[in-house]
Image 1 (cartoon, rainbow, N blue to C red):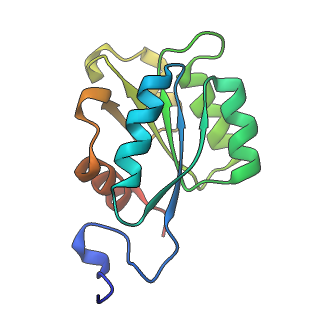
Image 2: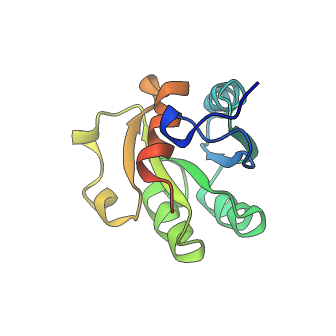
Length: 138
């Protein structure tokens, strides 16, 4: 099978897969996100965290290219976790995810360093590829 071109909407097959870490206190969403990542060519689920604190340690250890962070979590919320992840790994693409609509996001979400705010209900392979193509570091 020939390698996909960069303009095809997904990462090239001759490059390593985009490593993705999912951060959510709900195991059911982590499992759903893993399924989406696993069926999306060019992406690989490399880790999962159930809290913001756990996410920071995991991202520091794994250095993923893409991090999906739930906005509402007990303890350190997703906005603060995203901010700290960007401080730790500035090249990481961080996306905030939530059941809420973007207009209901915390006011501080825009200051977190996240590139996008995505509703969990809308998260799918096409969106994952689109987020990466639109925001991947050069």
